[in-house]
Length: 119
Image: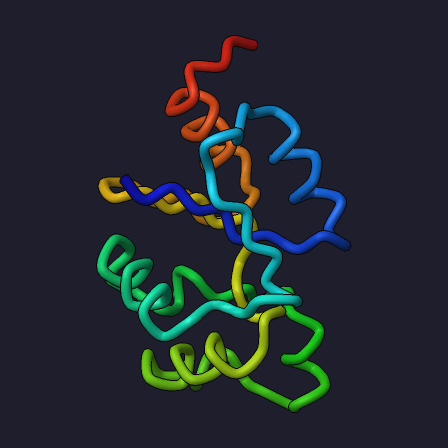
């Protein structure tokens, strides 16, 4: 069974979220050192049906590149996600059957439920 977490070591929020769970049998992927592959992005897309859902609109690269996220198409999001690690919304927990993307409250609660973690 596939169990991967894509995260950034320098991201405090990622570290805080990862620390809540027992990830002993999970593959931890630090995306700066080991960027997401086309295959992994395809697996994520299969679950979200949207590259935009995987895209971090908080990426510092958006401003640096002068991107207008409102005018981007799905293919643009896909290319950007493969081009630079900061475009991936983090963390991403990916299994054969589920995906959890980002650090918003709803997602973290869903993760806690998935891991069976009580408040």
